Length: 264
Image 1: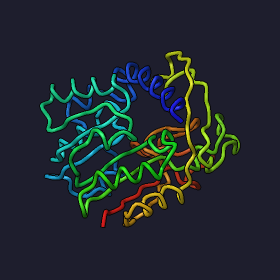
Image 2: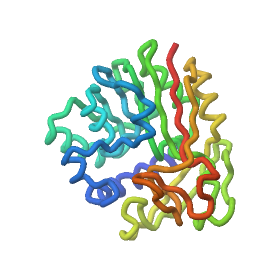
Image 3: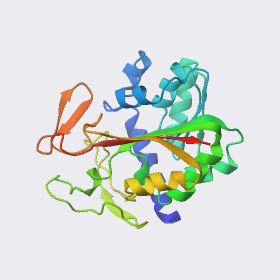
């Protein structure tokens, strides 16, 4: 497991250096005041003003700082030191109430010494985690009593499709086994050649939900959404602003799921 996580960290160090100037993340628009959260998250997380919030796997912190602009006191964590350095540069430039740490999620108990009103993570996070039971334990440990955990992520059904979105190729749940991929580019900067290894883990919704329940978190909702805020597959079309569906699959599959759970 450590080998795979170390390989992924190396990959994210490379990606973070490329992503900051990419059109995908559009940092200039963020600096101009754009909130990078999407309708799904904004509609579901509720009021965050005055709350302490921990953002896991925050990359270089655009969503973290958007939440800070909404009035939350935010701590962002990411495995990439390059990403965290960029996040600090932006936070200091904008003078926002946010701080950042470079850390693997699994090491947070040695780093975080406070409890939070909310733990937040979104889009492209679950597939990088080999062990959801430990992940859920850390989430629960980081929350105040009555605090809430929110997750919005791509639906595991999407990751069953092959690279051409033509047939089912990968398991719905990989049973804790890592899937190895050879990367030739980044999702945010596909025009830049890159050679590295990527390891992902497939987790079905049952595994996600049961890991949270198993750590004393009460599920308040599980929603499935028939569009994606990002063109995460090939052959996707934008039917409304930031609402993407596949040309052939249309709205007949879920693209995103979201969960809210409360520490009782």
